[in-house]
Amino acid sequence: MAAIEMRNIVKEYGDGFKAVNDVSLDIADGEFMILVGPSGCGKSTLLRMIVGLEDITSGDMVIGGNRVNEKAPRDRNLSMVFQNYALYPHLTVFENIAFPLRLQKRIAEDEVQRRVKEAAAMLELNEHLDRKPANLSGGQRQRVAMGRAIVRHVDAFLFDEPLSNLDAKLRGQMRTEISRMQRRLGTTTVYVTHDQTEAMTLGDRVAVLRRGFLQQVASPRELYEQPVNMFVAGFIGSPPMNFLPAVVAGSRLQLPFLELDLPAGVTGKVADGQLLIAGMRPDHFEDARLLDPAKRAKGEVFRARVDVTEWLGDSQYAYIPFEANAEVAKQLADLAAELDSEALRSQLIVKIDAMSRLRENHEGEFWADTSRMHLFDPRTGENLTRDEAAAADLARLEQDDFRDRIDAPDAAAR
View 1 (cartoon, one colour):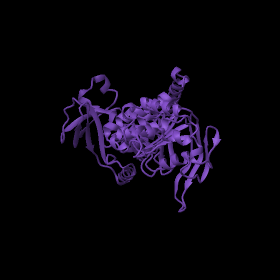
View 2: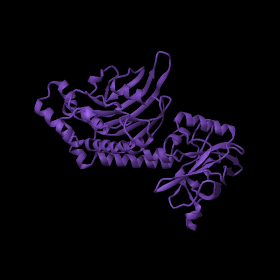
View 3: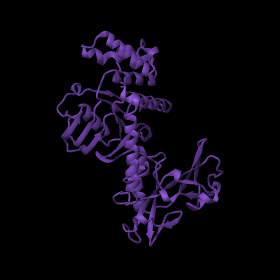
View 4: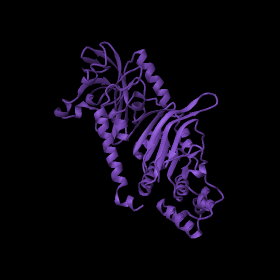
């Protein structure tokens, strides 16, 4: 295992395009780090620079305390799992897993047998060792690719969107297996994905990239609760955060469906009449008619007409259109295009209880927990209401959890 340090990493191509722009990131020994962002954000390029498949234009890549910029991939002691599995079709599962060990030649056959069987047992592949890849399911092929990665004693595992070719059910199963494997082995892991669900469920920390720039590095919970800007807020969460126009009117804030007091933390940052963008997540709303009076009094209640409802069994979503001025509408359209999300339109998405009787084309009464609302500068995207103290507390909790896991008895025995 080893820590990975990236210091001011830049990748610039011959035409002047910078795929990665001045990224500095420290990954602790044993940490599970997620690189996430929309297509073209530079996450896969950054991963390929770690493993040595892509040259670094400038900056330092340090693995285990050693600068590796000029080292070939084979000399970096890393294992990589690709999106397309990269299995040898003429070899059995056993020989595919054993392949990197046989390349080293110095490893005795009994040691090869032991390591392959150990990896196969961990990934529940014992019954398939004599089969060829063509006779395996997609999930089994991905487990073989993982087995080939973990069979070596390496400093870090690198995953490049390994689950994108699997269906939704298999992705869920494989997420659990990857998480369990990483926790058991305790090996430093860097995992690239465009799927924010994978990012939120797998990583100790998540690094969000946009157009080659690092936006925020934090635990999944901190990203969700204290995003630094509108891009991170819109990317993390499913359905995404709602963005609504908000106009400052003295000490009040006017939104499409309600008016409330201007949060104390932004009073000195904004001017009367200024246009802001309010951000509220779907789970910050409820059907007001189902609430007890005590909870109802702790938020804001408003009425709105429901356009569409989606019932999911344990919950449901109501979609409520609203009017937005040209500036906000363009901002939402641009962000929706970048995030490939049709949900970021002039509509409010509200998560309500499955027992709610709200129906399409009917007016409903809704409750909003406005204490959890964020306010963004529409020009810069900056989160004006980010609570730095709360973010620091979440970061400390994440660090404590990580240290407890690394210091656990089974980790010490590895």
